[in-house]
Image (cartoon, rainbow, N blue to C red; front, side, top):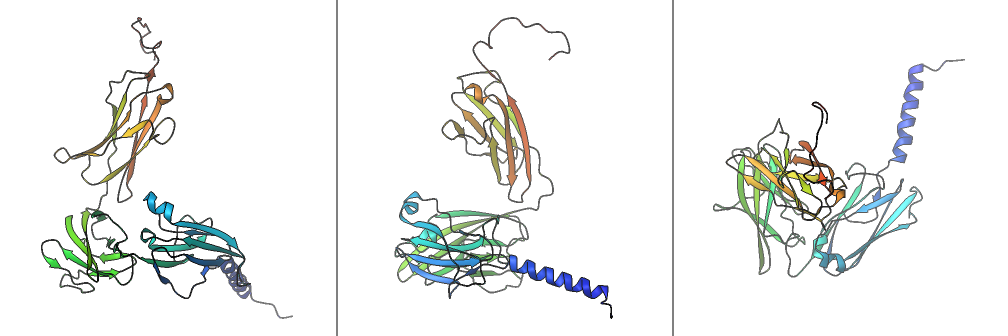
Length: 348
């Protein structure tokens, strides 16, 4: 009997294993002829996705409650239309409005984030007579690291809106053209204007112009280019309210970091994330001369549950992070008196 080489057996086993794995992780399919669809404000829209694993849909998150109440989006588990797939999920949109312009992504139910290799997407435009831009903000700030790609989110609500970019004080920037310094601004209606003009640290002001027929809308874009950071300092915390707070009194904590670029503060209290009904967070205070940024946490009327460890986590746009903690002691009236306290040296 002729023996089969071991190398062939190994090759066959690996090939078969990869084939089986590929069946289990096949990219889901969206049942649409187009990857981009133009809708009108108030339209209804339904689309189905099918795949080998349980699925979910992601869609643009809208903050304005008025549009949240008007536009209704739901998902329904349905049977796949192709026998090669095990699962299918239908997306149903009622009364779509312009803030919902964007990507609608179908992906594995357990996936933490979307990527094109393991998910599928469809882009919906929502034409609106009054709104040419997806964002109504008159000004936006985009912060990037030096030498990285920057995206100015100049996104139109429909594909028939013309978008141009103005360098503030200097005129219109040609799109899709590489200059002598190999700098280019290119436009994609799904993302906005993409550029590699991040060589120099500092702030540049642009204006995105949206136009259709006789209607026009201008949006200011501030591009803030930060230096590449190798070291991120530790923040400091202190109790501004005196350090001997009695239950019922006001507690004020300060978190400060000696830094000059934009940062994000995330607080954790003894009971978890700050309760907005009781806890106030100040706007960030910046001191360019001393190069520090700070934020205060205030509880106007403390209770015993506010006693414990507080954490201040500070991060920047380059994903650097550092944390500081402070244990806060709150005294009940029976604990705060003028009785003499004696202790042996070295004892707590």
